[in-house]
Length: 249
Image (cartoon, rainbow, N blue to C red; front, side, top):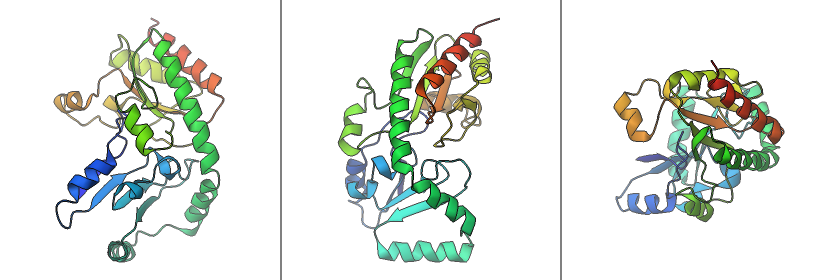
């Protein structure tokens, strides 16, 4: 099995899914599995690129309201489906009826929400690139991102996920930035209507060694942001004031 994130967390790199699937399938019996949570099927359908199984955290963009814990596998092979279904049934991994109701409710607004996530995300990314407090912005929708052309080739758009580094900030200033946010919530989830921000180095990737963090680009001044569907000027203003607060004595 080859397992990969089609858009990496938290650095927002884009993987060439079609090429990876072609190489992997040269070995008989290899299943290619991808996590498509960052993109959602609204913007990207990996099965069309040769991937065998697509995983989504349905708690994120698909549900969209941060009130469901659920996972989802999408595949196009009946034999694999039967095997996975048997494992699910025997293991008891079956969602409750109200969780299913909430997930179906969220799916009804997926298209509307994803368009707004994308619009808000790229506006915030462009604004951050001009802010002197920002060192680097990671958003594949930006023309200067190294994976921008690949994103355009294999997807119809992009979500509200981005990351950035705060110039001159250490762990102390990064913490002050997160605590100064008012509209944006300091939290480690993603894909809901509300904007969230976190520092991967002290939260999602906390237990990696310093060497492991360095290899994947995780630094003390790195912020990951899940841009929500609020009024974009409110998001921008909140991030700006928190950046200034991070360097006040």
